[in-house]
Image 1 (cartoon, helix red, strand yellow):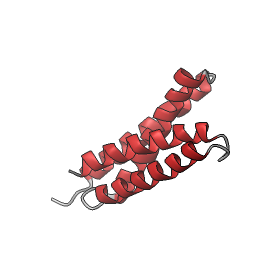
Image 2 (cartoon, rainbow, N blue to C red):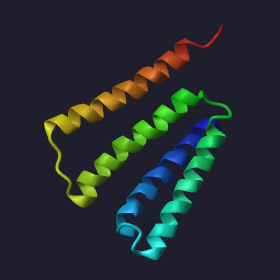
Image 3 (cartoon, rainbow, N blue to C red):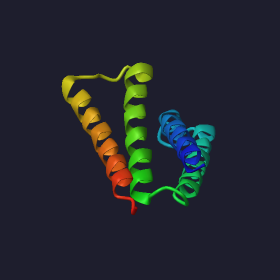
Length: 110
């Protein structure tokens, strides 16, 4: 169940971050309110997830995958530039999250 909560937290965080763009620096009321609601829901689901998942791993996946997804959304939806350095940095984030997950699996007591 923790993984489902974590997935929901990631989707809500991604949506909240995208809504931030539409709030135009809090000058638009509905996107501004929606952003806070989505982030609040994201943190709520993240707190549910860490009841059964390791905190360090869950947070790394939440923030790392959120960063990778929002970077991808920025390129696809908002026409942000992509270059080799950005690709390498995103790959390093993915490797870091995967590494934490692997250490979490192998580090569990017998």
